Image (cartoon, rainbow, N blue to C red; front, side, top):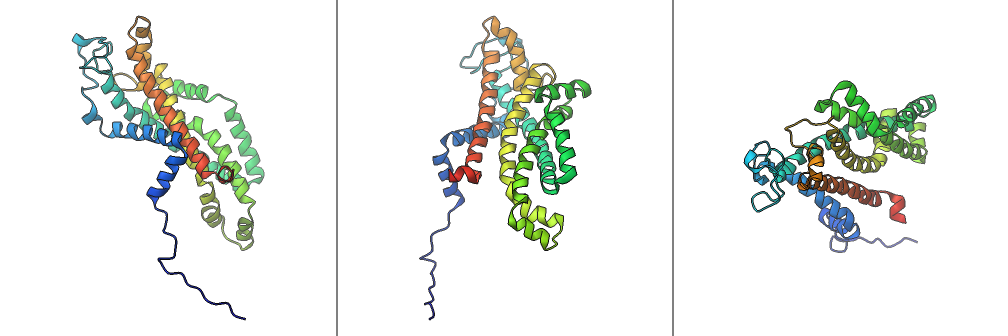
Length: 297
């Protein structure tokens, strides 16, 4: 007995799901994550078009307009040097994004490579390496960053390196945990039994299955790096004057806010809060979308 052959024409096949449709579905399902993405998009636009969007030069001192409250000319007021706060916040988004993205990329990627290698090879290498990571995790991230910057200086490369190092331990542990699960999959055992090289197994089978956790780690790490940079600048160990930086603006306006000049610290604080919030909620949304366990739930 032979079964009748059936063929489907193009008109009978379901239409392919476009990227736009997937994006709209994500926005409908994860409204808070979409809000975080909108904040990040606005921040990126500010950084790219800072010269066009800024009403004033962020570095220009104008001692005739010192400590002006928000008004029609200076929407967010001015600081102790008469500089426009809105312009400095717009240009400060460049500093925040540059340090945040570079630090998160270096830290998350290094942790990704090390965690993937530890989870795949296992054995004595994994045992010794993870004890080394446990030693790093014994230090609070901010204390580790402060120690590195205090030792090597607060030049921007050292600030980026210090923040990157603080991201590595958590990234290693998360990626290693996912790599261990993939390592036990039957298709990986089959590839090993067929004599495939380690490089082929890692790049063809392991790496694609741990990319989703990496994207989540990277997104959250950008927010953490922005917060760490702001903390360093607030403590006087980050970016130096007159570079526009949100943490530096917050540090300069803290004492002034006690005397009633609230805007010099309030608006930079709002910028830091929104940026960190945006990256964190976007990371949570990506986790819910990319994690198959959460999708099944």
